[in-house]
Image 1 (cartoon, rainbow, N blue to C red):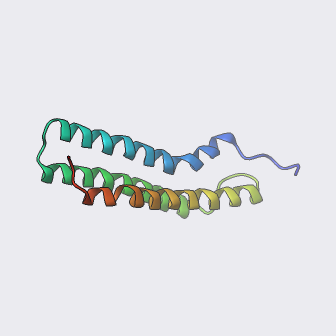
Image 2: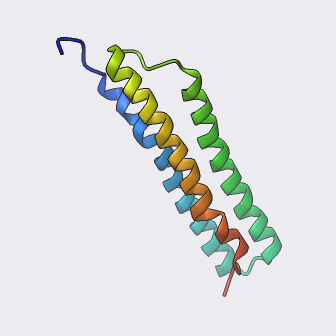
Image 3: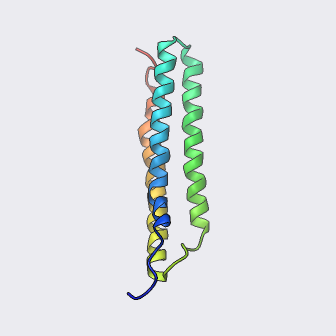
Amino acid sequence: MNGRPLAPRRLWWLAVGFTIWCVALVILYALHAIGCAFGWPTGPLRVSLAIILLLHLVAIGWLWRYRAAAIRDPGPERISTFMHTVVIWTLIAALVATVITFGPALLLTTCI
């Protein structure tokens, strides 16, 4: 293991998918709370929530496609191949978590 270590700036790719998930959580719940507080009609509120969810899904999907197109991260062969695989699967997990977490919420009553 005398090879060059992986650059620390490459590790942020591990968090990018779930960071987008967190941003989606904050924006969706803030929009929902604002819409309910101000008495927005159910139809436009639901459409707004769906658009915000779709934009976040597109962002994670685009990152997945972008990272999958890269052969591997620059750096030592074994570490960079491992990091590439882990980042791809982390993005897939973030995409699935976004769909499972926020998708069914669009089917519920918007404001009680």
